[in-house]
Length: 546
Image (tube, rainbow, N blue to C red; front, side):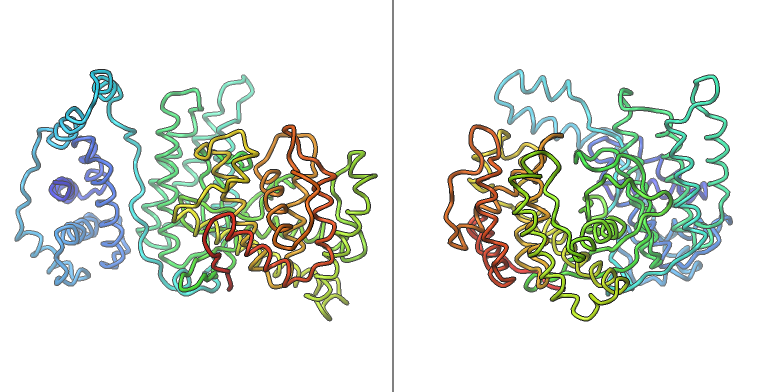
C-alpha cells in the first residue's frame, strides 16, 4: 500500500518535472501511512541522485531522469543501469502504476483494532479525540556511510561551505530574536539574508543532492523563524526543520564533506544550548567494545565560539546517531584546568567555606594525583608547554570519546536502573532526570575503567560535581556519589556511612572515601571502576579501546 502511494506520487512528479510535486502528493494520503511513505520517497530520491550521477538539476529532463530512477528503485528493479537515461525511461514506461485507494483503509483498520482492544468507552473516546499524530516531515533512514565516514580519517574541507554554515547561517538564525527599530520582527533583514543563502553557490557546487537538501532546509527554516514555543505549531515546525537539517548532514557525509549541522530545538537536556549549531568534523574515529565498533566524530564549532560556561565535552545526538566530541571545550579544559595542575596548582573543589578550609587538603591531594598521571602520560612532552598541551588534548579527547561511545552502546539496549541510584533519587526510573543519571553513571564508570592514562582525572572531574553547592541540581552530583561509593567498596575502603542522608550530600563522608583513592594506582582504579559497573548494572563491562 505504501509503495503504491509512493509510485503514484513519483508519477505526478515526473509529469511536472518537479520532485516537490511528488512530496506534496503524499501530503494528501492516509495520515497513518504518510510518515512511512515520505521516508521511502526520500530514501529513493537520494539513492537515485547518487546512482544516476545527475549534476544539472536545472533541466526538466534531468529531474525526470532522477524521478524515474527513484520509481525503479521503489519497484525493486535493480537490473537497469540507472545512469542510462534512455534505458531508465524505457523501463519506467513499461510499468503502469495502479492508482492508490482513496478510502483511508489503514486508518479504518487501525481504528478497528484500537476499538476492539479498548477496555472502556473512555479509552475509545480518547483515541478518537486525540486525532492523527504530528504531520511533520520525518527523516528517512540515513544512507550507508561511505569513504572516511565508513573507514575513519579526516573528511574534506571547503572554505565556501564554512562561510555559509559558520557566518551566513548563524546571521539568519539570529533574526528569530532580532527586532527592527520599531520593536517589530526585523522581517526585511530576515528576507534579505534568506535570499542571500538561497542564491549562495557553496552548496550547489557539490551536486543536486546537497543543493536540494539545502534548499529544503531553508524552506523549513523560513517557516520556523517567525514562530515561538507558545505557538501550537512550533513543535511540529521544529521537528520538520530538524529532520531537514539532518538530511543536509547526511547529504554532506555522502560527499565525504566534514560538516555537521546540529539542530537542537526539541531536546530535553538542560545543558544543551537551544538553536542551530554548525560544526567542522576534524576526524572520524572508532571505539571498539569486543566485536562492536562505534563511530565517533571529533568536531569544532563554526562561527562564534560557544560560551565558556558550558561544561559539556561531548554529546550523543539521537538525530545524527553518532557520538560527538567537542574539541573546543576540551581545549578550554586543558588550558584552564590541566595546565595549572601540571604546574603545581591544586584541583579546585569550589569556593565556599567548606571547600576552602576543610576541603583544602583533599584539593591538594587530588591535584597531586592528577599531576602524577599527567607526568607519566606526557613523559618528555611535559618539558614543553606546547607539546604538553597538544598531548593532553589528545589524551582527554580519547577519554571523552570512550564516554560518548558508552552512551551510544547503552542507548541501543536496556540499561538496568541500579538500586543505589534509585535510593537517592526522588524521580522514578523512567523520568528524564533518572534516565540521564543512570546513563551518566554507566558512561563515567566505563570511562574510568577504559582510560589507560588518566583515570584519576575522570574520577575527580566527576567528584567535583558532588562537592558543588548552589545552582540547580544535576545528574552528575548523584552519579558521583554512587560511583565513588561503589568503587570504594571494590577497593576495600571503609565507609563512614551513607554519603547521602537527610536528603543532602555529606561532603565530609564523600571526602573520607575519596582521600585514600589518590594513592591508588591506575590499574587499581580501572579495575575498581569495571567491577563497580558490573555490580551496579548486573553484567560484565565490555571495556572500550580505540
